[in-house]
Figure 1 (cartoon, rainbow, N blue to C red):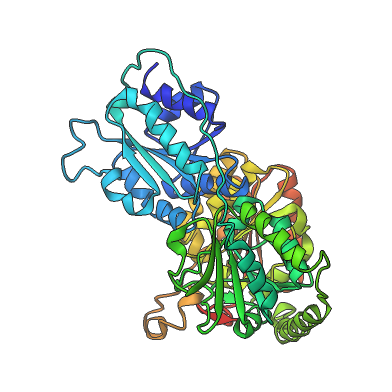
Figure 2 (cartoon, rainbow, N blue to C red):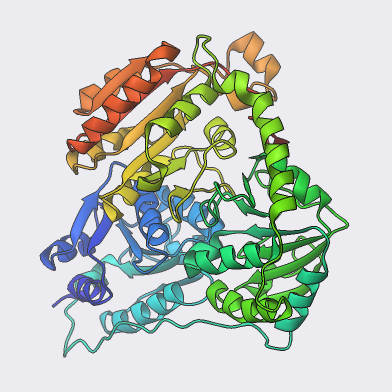
Length: 547
């Protein structure tokens, strides 16, 4: 076998059944020969986004793999790799490298030189007999510790080189880490001593599948729970103790309880300060449970830290809390009543937009109608950057783990399409929905053709306001004088031209019926794009604004 066949065989032994790819790379053909399905996309970003979704939706029980051409193909993929790094997603990235005789000559692009800052582990294979060891190191990094992308660059001539001898390769081990046993009782005591604790849960809960433990801890303490965007759906948002989720925008109850908390317990979060995140207030006590010591004291002063996988951390903490309460949970009635009062007041303020009959259609009316038309427990939904990301999270109630792919530390437009395509391939039994805008479709919309060609029946909800609405407040002169944020297109026609089902909806009264028709079409195996003509809504769309 040659080098490409060795890579394919190792991928198969590691349980890889799908390879997301863009030609040319010898691994693609070798994977197909090994019965690994290649999904060839229209651009590199989308393929890596699909691999990203597989790793998330399976809590890295399966690892998404993406392969692409050396040089321009690798360059085009950089943004998607940076996004996965920011969002802590484990992806195996396999760029072909320039042949060894050319690899060191500028300006030939070197992945190992230029992508080091957005990978957890990176190396270039310079001889065919090094491939097994390189991939063993790669999968070990992907399956252990903090998840992030790993890149193994294999020069094109190495992929074609003959591999001698038998392939000695076994799937790598996966380990878990636990917290310092001396610190766990101190955390339990601090949580029980707090007057207004808030549990702030993130993506680490998803990767550890620690949803049951998080809920038990909240109910023992009678403590409200809010989540990051990446952690959304880690705690059921119809639970009386739920505050919803937050990112650039957040619900009133989430904002108020964090502002009034005397202790915030971050569980599987980084507390990273970004332009798109829920900023943590000063003057609070913070306890931090994370698998990465780099995050401790990075953006908030950490009083106590629990390092490890979140299921192990919470499994150690729960008995300490339970024993101190003699096994009897605190009365959650008063805090649940307070949460409900704030939530009811907040929803009443937003109800005119959520039920608006005005045209163009209110995007908030669209979100509300979408939520009512489907079963959230049988749905996986994601959003795109800009207004969709800011508008949907406070009002979308997620009740089942991994039913919402939230993101926002980096904000590439067009990310949501690849995510939801990958989610549908990972969970074909689910209705998979992408909520995006007309700016985002301009970045990755041509990969809607991939949905048709590869028979991926997603439901794509496009909010078209003919503008970059999130930018209107920061570019008023450019908008007024030069119409710089105006964009246009008939995307329903575009979808039909590609062979999908497309509809354009302008009447608020037709929203629900169009969504029902779209859902039925996906059940028939047809990708759907519903284009809703919406208002240039800036309320709730600015970074850092509470809904």
